[in-house]
Amino acid sequence: MREYLNFYIDGQWVAPAVPKTLDVINPATEAVAGRISMGSAADVDRAARAARRAFDAWSQTPLAARAALLEAIVAEYQKRYADMAAAITEEMGAPAALASKAQAAMGIGHLQTALTVLKSYAFEEARGSTLLRKEPIGVCGLITPWNWPMNQIACKVAPALVAGCTMVLKPSEIAPFSAQVWTEILHAAGVPAGVFNLVNGDGPTVGAAIAGHPEVDMVSFTGSTRAGIEVARNAAPTVKRVHQELGGKSPNIILPDADLQRAVTAGVRGVMNNSGQSCNAPTRLLVPHSLMTEALAIAKAAAEATTVGAPDSGASIGPVVSAAQWDKIQTLISKGIEEGATLVAGGPGRPEGLDRGWYVRPTVLGHVTNRMTVAREEIFGPVLVVIGYDSVDEAVQIANDTPYGLAAYVWGADLEQARRVASRLRAGQVNLNGAAPDLMAPFGGYKQSGNGREWGDHAFGEFLEIKAVLGWAPKQG
Image (cartoon, rainbow, N blue to C red; front, side):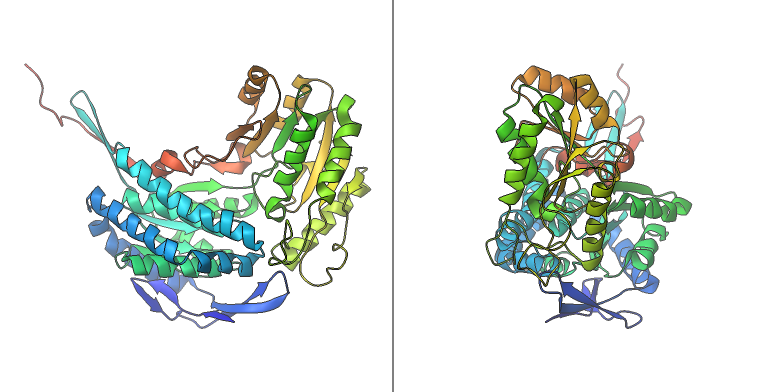
């Protein structure tokens, strides 16, 4: 059993100000997998002040030194790669293959992307006699979720670090093991004392203390829209920058000329991947009414081909992260059926033969209207809703009729038409015809899916202030 009872503050592992522990549950077995200490405002204060002391020196380091440190982190990460994947599997139930090939891989991917961006990023720009400088914003509070733990830690820490910022990280208390391994990696790589700090704890205590701390200059949060609103409220009195990557209810428009078999099958797989626990999952499948019967048959087959089982079983998906998450998903599946949706595949309860662990049946709900609860709320489980439309204009209207705007998907044989549809969708990232992920593409949302962008060069801007120095260049003549 893992025991992580100290926090990482000012380059050392230190005991919490007030002893308090939390059991971490393995969602595949419902057994206690480890314990962590739960932090307090006093721990956050200690970490924030350490980050402030470290800021002056770190912010002035040459870019070559920051690049060298990032390269050292990549090297240490590669040494601990298997440990990282195992930690992710144990804490949040990701199948072993997914943990290794995707979850842990995203961490090293964002580190390498930050290195690539750093080589050509313009921190200074001359405009006439004025110089525009992009300077590190200061001490950053980073609050990350459990569903893609290493993706979200790395896509914040890497750009913040190379931008010259110092930071305090609060990972999810539900899935804290990977953050511990990450911190050990940074320590081994030689990150200077105080530049990176880790405090475990819950949102109402540690998260709120980070968001409201006067020594924290910006806070970057990924999680639910509800929690993101609280972060913004706590940050408001100190007028700090708030970056949010929040929920989603992403539409997946299948145009009439699309390859229906390919598009629907890919859509189902996109929802089921990671047990449905991805904020950008294509959870609303929009198909022409004339193709509904065929589309539902394809969706049913794809859902029933999605195997569910223990992370080491080779199954397509593992459990969802917790009892609370399982209960929420069950409630929403039942609500969808009560409101008139057709149960096409799956349904309430655990899959057959899985009596322990938070496993969910891959579920498809057909003939859904966009007014139903299951079309409005983020379920965050392996549940797809299928909505019919009569015209492309109606499909766009339905797609945009949501408080969210994180991602959208379009499938169509006529690429120009697919592009036109994409231009009308109110979402931060639109995927055409199953395009592969791009770590250089900005990631973030419109509306209640948040503000700001992560990934690639756009991530750097979240951690930089812009200074105009007038009269930098002497007047000519």
